[in-house]
Amino acid sequence: MTRWPFLALFLLAACGSQPPAPPTTVASVDLARYSGRWHEVARLPQRFQDSSSLRCEEVTATYQPAAGGEISVLNECVNALDPARPRRMALGSAYPVAGSQNARLKVTFFWPFYGDYWVLGLDPDYRWAVVGTPDRRNLWILSRTPELPPAEMERALGIARAQGYDLSGLIRAR
Image (cartoon, rainbow, N blue to C red; front, side, top):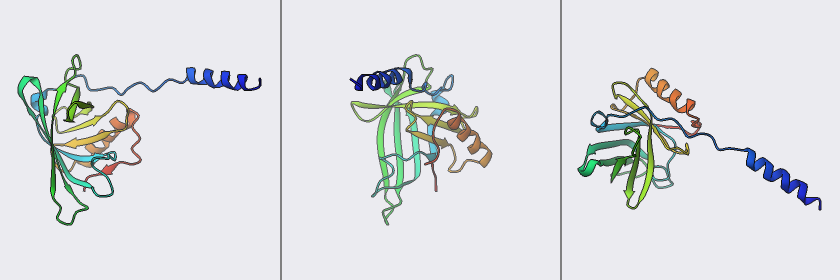
């Protein structure tokens, strides 16, 4: 009989806890201006970029308009753990989520599986972008150049912090 009060307390606590609200995206993204090559200047660890046999460095992502309103995505990196430093490539596609003004995309590298790509911060001149997922497990800071000036990097990181991303494991580009 003494288990019932504990069970009731547990259920009450579970009902009272709410997941955090999803991050907020930018108001809109001009896909023509967003197209082109971006350099990854920082990221949260990713299983497809960071493992015992792979450490992606010199990471770039190239976005180009494709048929039917889709976007071609080409991700490239150098595997720093391989002495030959081979360049790895992954070709995918993306499409804008309806009603998001292009600030939310669905991306696939392995159809039919799609992932979220939310633009959380964007320099007015499209020099850098903060991209993440609504669960806050994935985050990338992208720049048109291989390095981002410290003040701009701090601005981008500030956006990620304000959106609730834990930056303690952040990997900066080398």
